[in-house]
Length: 65
Image (cartoon, rainbow, N blue to C red; front, side, top):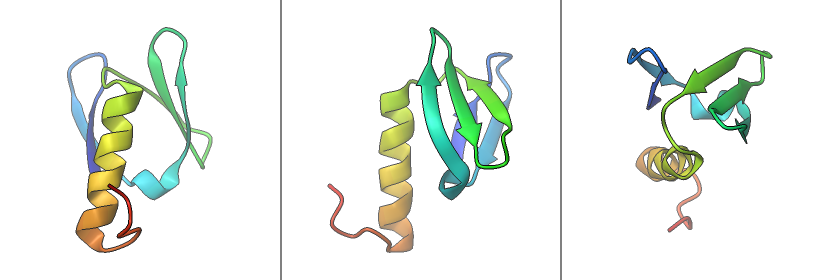
């Protein structure tokens, strides 16, 4: 799970394998495979780094640096 912060300051943990895409317009929106959309404070770059760190932690995609 990775931590994200909603615009209202609440913190959530989401499964990064469920993210379909990240949109920036100008707010950052995570579009989940379920169709749910989460508008967050985190930058796309921050989310990508969290996903990479998570995958390294669980042992998948060990070649990501």
